[in-house]
Image (tube, rainbow, N blue to C red):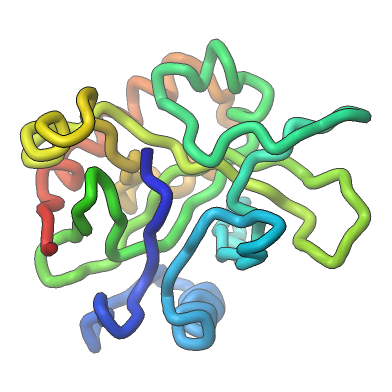
Length: 208
């Protein structure tokens, strides 16, 4: 399972000409988080109360969120920080109707750090849910969506941890479809994003 990713930071600097997202306000907000927080997204919890940026809605709003999906209910608990793409319809159908993107240019999996050539930024799929608790934390929680590893992610990680998994990377041409609340979260959407993610998924490689 992927439990660490980020955008920039001392060990994974962004290229000078990199564009996180075309909208200037969105790009600036995400870069501010990267600069101020060291560019490292970690799972949120009682001891590691770090909050990470998500991009959601057709206006590409940026909001800090809790990385651990909240289920809701009187005795609710945080349920998952990763959600398999092949379980979105069966296990996460309700949450799958509310989706977000996670800005990144690296992630850790199988004891290695992975990146696109040139450390270019990319977007990881996520599902989101409101946090129904009264504290000073953010209002939204999220879970990263993962897919079956392909390319180097398949061969390298399989040797280390059995079934290879990797973040589901969404290409730019699918940002709006993934974020559009009018697009149903169903098996057809899963199939489309799996296919669309293959080129970028094949392009990532371990850098350490």
